Image (cartoon, rainbow, N blue to C red; front, side, top):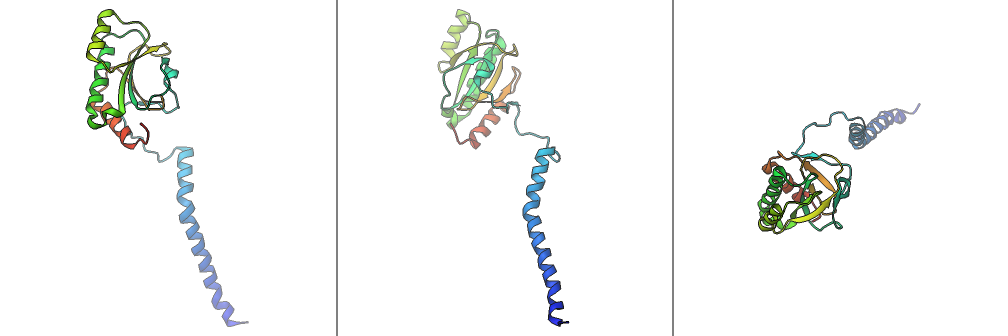
Length: 185
């Protein structure tokens, strides 16, 4: 028996242990993250937005909006499937106030109204007078009959949805956050 062979065996075992630890440190977090994603455990239930997230890749056409090709800026879109009554006018006003509230970022966003029914002459005149930059689109009703406000990205994809009772400050916070992290528009 050679005494030098016995002395190197523990070192070889120690080297293998170190290699396995390095592999575990590198691959462990990736395997854990993959398992968390696949099986949905340890996923936080809190969220940082206030509206309803539309995360299935829908665009404006999916909700019946007949708009031209995607614009180059973000949009606060109000949909009014049954004409523009009081709730709809409140959302149009809110969309404009949110756009103004963006301050120096206001040029990156616009506001629009999509309605299925023609508006009364008085409402048309009021919108033309009070909201000269309001874009107007046609709407084919597809779902909810209540007016809603949508945040639409520059590619025309729906991002967030709010009902008629939404808080303007919360929508402004959501839009500011989207503009901050966005590389488009």
